[in-house]
Length: 442
Image (tube, rainbow, N blue to C red; front, side, top):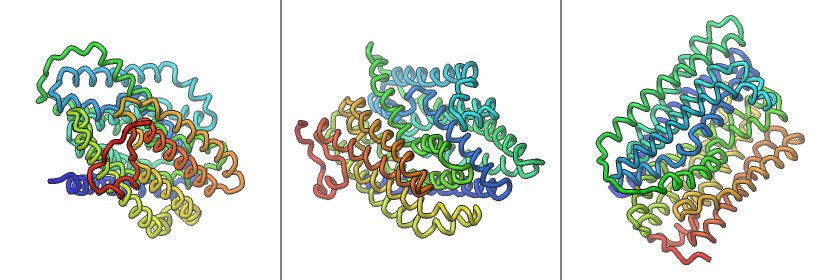
């Protein structure tokens, strides 16, 4: 099976699973809004956003590079190095959880509105953060070990089932406050169970990999050189809207936060369809790079970028058609989210068209070069929220996000072009249907 067929078949299965899981999440969020009001949904989304941001920081970036190093060590048969990397990644999660439990409570109170909401549910929030961090590390490793289904399905199918079960139990609560508390506790314990089963899959996947002993005294420093920039990259891309929700908590009411939060969750679903394309081909890309097959690497990047860009446009059009009907489930007030969602989906098209520039910079051993573009984008987000949200409300929030993503995507693309000498945008793939040829960097 050639790469394009593999991308379309496997990414379609993963995306279909995500659609199924996201549909359950969508219905659960609609149920929260209908049963206990938009304010309860707003608090629920704030808690999830804070937990997600904490969880992605807990492995100290090792979940963001897990696929790369797992694929490299698997391709080279370096099972001992793989086991060392895995031990380091999971130790970060455990130690971060202990630190969070001991000193985290007073610190989150400094975050203002989201901090106060999080403190009210602190113990289950810590459990959720630990479980979410474990799933992030597990999933990255399994993708790198060419088990993308095992990597994605716990998060795409089983966690949504836990959310629905928690909503069913919360239905019998005597008040909205009690229902939200029960919901968070059930989610925490359910996520924990899923993360432990997921971890067992990782252990089973690495056992058959033989160990070739090679002395690499500086390998740990190589992990850190990639991990620290990539945790920032992950926060700015995969968890961009969780961060944005926390920033907007001081500008929007809980109802508007709930509406915008639903928009961002739908956007996350749509963006996962594009991310699954890259996830399916990542092990092949990294294997080509590990074996010094630069022509094969660039060809695979180009094919993945082409498929991702076309998919982003298709999903954007689909959201224009489906969104008005989907928002009806939440109640009349949520129709205000239809236009902002369309603006957010444009951001996905922009990001796909500019291509995986941060990946290219890391492949060329320049991961830190991505950070100025990300800093510029986040700065634009803060300024955009301050200038556009007060007069425009939800549309201002969506426009600020689109502006931020456009600026940092363009800046990263230009940085990769100058440093790596490779144009990873869709323009390069359309102009050169044959394998991309690397030109000298300036």
